[in-house]
Length: 197
Image (cartoon, rainbow, N blue to C red; front, top):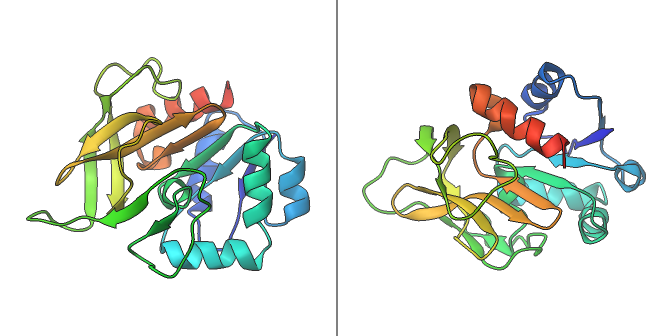
């Protein structure tokens, strides 16, 4: 069973539709007890980094998510669900991320339109389980104003005012900056690949 974490602001309907499209069984939960039972976790993210972290804290989910990741449960973070894995974000300087990954999420700067919205190709840095079968430069759909740095766990990057992490894979930890639920067949393949892990 796949568990979708509902912290009150995620794009749950689209994620649920995607899981239903690939025939996956799932449950939507918002308590530590339910997350502790999960054998696969999806944390969708839409909105503000600070609000997400506040909601996770209010629901008592911060520690539980960290524990489940540490215990090896497959985890997929989407958009802000990727960003929250880092130590912090310029979007909310006073908010502390989960700190599972090193670095700080930054705002796009320079002569580019913000937010970054639309289809962009991914550049693989190494073999990726999430992108398996999608070729060397798959196109996916992005909608974000902040980006995570390229780190050793970055499996694929995207370039928009500079390179940033588009896919992160580290043992049981998976995360994507793009929205699989809005990325057509490529997004369905990403979800299928995650469900097979």
